[in-house]
Amino acid sequence: MRAIRRAVPDADVTAWEINAQVARASGATHMDFLLANEALRFDRVAMNPPFADGADVVHVTRAFGMLAPGGKLVAIMSAGVEFRSDKKTVAFRELVAANGGTIERLPEDSFRESGTSVRTVIAEITKR
Picture 1 (tube, rainbow, N blue to C red):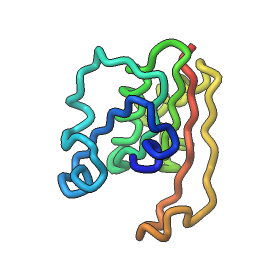
Picture 2: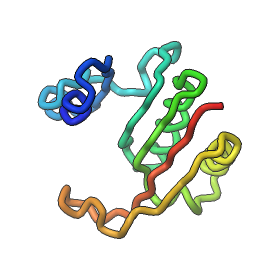
Picture 3: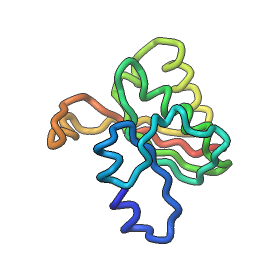
Picture 4: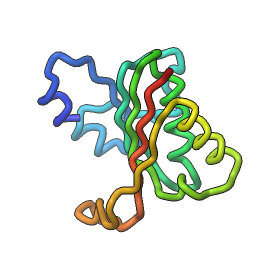
């Protein structure tokens, strides 16, 4: 949040964070993103959703629905999105493909400094 606000000081930035302490420190709204108003529209979305139990797919799919036409979404996701075969993950990969998006593997241990060694990808999708 701070980096985005420094890089683009005139940008209207909206952020949600479920962890109260992190929300206070970053200036985000302390709230579950899945409870945000679906009618909101954004030109750009950058996100690092929770990964547990496929929550990343649920969050990113919902955020994609909040993009304005031509809007771009970039999300850090669990590498499981590349191979899981459950209905929501398969549908997500189809959504990415239908919009000319990409899912790119990140190097192993990309987030070691933050205390995790989970394998990750970066998904980029522009809403057609």
